[in-house]
Length: 107
Image (cartoon, rainbow, N blue to C red; front, top):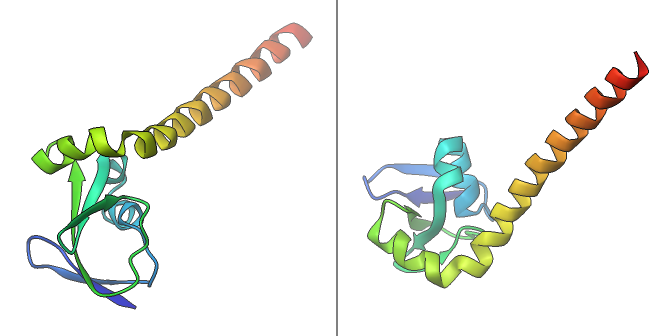
């Protein structure tokens, strides 16, 4: 287990190798959807960077000045994840629509 210290001074324990995105997900799904990057021990990193030791962590979103700055830097990393989620939703909708059309045709 590793200890992660948040900007408000709160310290929580997590499994070694957890990513900032997974930390955000354990806090709130809404926060996880909005995380662009993270400030890990004073260094801006991608939200998929594993955390292997005790650390200080600030999750960066569009609401943070640093978060806005990192969007341009991390855009090639961030966009594929967002596109993947977008296409998963599209695939789910198309499957649902296909099954409804099939049911309508077959009845």
